Each structure stands twice: as C-alpha cells, then as structure tokens.
Image (cartoon, rainbow, N blue to C red):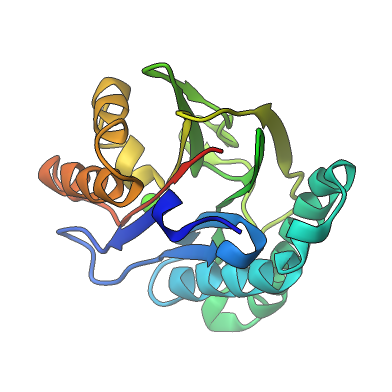
Length: 220
Ligand code: CA
C-alpha cells in the first residue's frame, strides 16, 4: 500500500468554467491512482468522468494482489469496463456524446504501470528530466479515443522505477497552460502534495481556462 506521504492529489474548477468535469481516482489500498477528464458539455462531462472513476475503482480494487504479468491486462480490462459503463449511460438523450479520458497508475517497488485513453497524461521525473509516458490519442486537435465513445484500445506502459523517481498524472488543464520546463521544476519541489498544489496553482496563474487535476506520486 502506498504511504499517504508518498502521493498527493488536487483538482480545481479553474477560473472560467462553471463546473469541474475532471475526476480523481485515489485507491491507495490497491496502489492505484488516476485522473479523468470528462467531455460532453453541461452535466454530461461530470457524469462521464465520475462513472468511469467509479467503475475503475471497483475493477482495480484487488490489483495489488495480482501477478505482475497480469497487471497490463487487468488495467486494460478495467478501462474497457469503464468504457462500457460510460457508453451505456450515454444512450440517454441528454447525455449523448459524453465521454471521458482516463490515465491510471499502478505502483510497486521498482516498477510502475501506466494505462490511458485520451489526452490525460503521465510523466516520469528522473534525475531532473521529465519524460512523457503516454502518447495522446488525438489527431488535429480532436480526441481519437475516449471512454464511452466508439472503440477504445487502451495503451499500457510498464517501466522500471527507483527511489527519487516521481510520477505525474494530469489533465490537459495543466499541459495546455504550462510548459514542460516549468512542470519539471515544480514537480521536483517539496513533498508530493506540495508539488501537486504548486502545479494546480501555476495552471490557475496561467489563465485557469480549464479544469485542472494533478496527481503526484513518489516511486519506491
Ligand atoms: Ca480538460
């Protein structure tokens, strides 16, 4: 189980939006963290990200006990379950077209897995260098994959980690406002919760045009 000092998380509606369509997944008993960014307008985006997180929580609750070889499949299957749940709810007329991104992290000593759909991202900070672990499912500014819409094929990445490595999960409310040098510098600062708070704050200072959600976790 992740120590509570080993991670931080935060979300903010931003300065212009009336609602927060982002959602957080915090499941320390399964060493799982995640973020989701709903789309669909009005209340639908909030419904989509909340439903996806609820389904992921249920699907991943026993992940800490899984064999390492089974982790990528379990993460992909959980995202497919969330996809089906959001798609089903999206049949209702007022929710037509709703969907959500999701990026999920599973941490173990010396190892981490990242699974995602959409343009919410994961980064690794190692030796002061920031590396993006996810490739956006996006073309010409539009999402090519989102939970609840069409067909999804989650990407799952596995990486070796060590003490001093730090992982970041975030919605595009951070990455659309803040360049990677600034992200790297703030991510390296203080405890995971202090780094989280600094990253949410800089997104607001850079205009706060969108909801912003951040998770920071120290690798073991
Ligand atoms: Ca967003």
